Length: 172
Ligand SMILES: [Fe+2]
Ligand SMILES: [Fe+2]
Image (cartoon, rainbow, N blue to C red):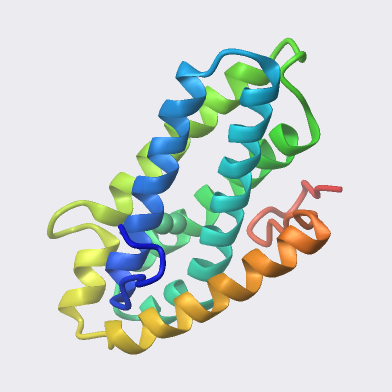
C-alpha cells in the first residue's frame, strides 16, 4: 500500500485503483455531513476519471485482439455510462435530492464493471494476462500517465468527460 512504491504490473496497478475506489464508496456511505460527503465524492470522481482514461488510452487498446471483442466493447460503453453520473456528481452537491442515489448507483455500476474486468478466467484481465501482454511495460506507462493526469486535473479540475461510444448524447 506504500504510495511511494506503486506496483508496476499493469493488472496490479488497475486492481489497486479498484480497491481504492471501493474503499472510497464505503467511506461515502458511512459519511456524515455535507462537507465530508462532497469531499469523498470528489475523490471518487477524480479516481474514476483518471482510471477510466488510463484504461481507455493505454490498457484497453493493448487488449484489442487479445480479449473477447464483445467484452471490450461493453467495457467502453460501461465507462461512458459511468461518466454521465460522474459528471452529475461532480457538478452537484449533497444538498441535492438525488445526490446520494447517484453515488450509490455509480458504485453499483462500477462494481459490475470491476467484476467484468477481474473475473477469474473469462475476465478481461485474465484474458489479457493469458495472451501474454507485457504487463511490466504497460504498468510503467499506466503509472506515468496516471501521475500526469492527476497533476493536470488537480490544477484545472476534471475535464468535461468524453463519451465516444455514445452517438446521441453529449456532455457539457
Ligand atoms: Fe478498471
Ligand atoms: Fe474499466
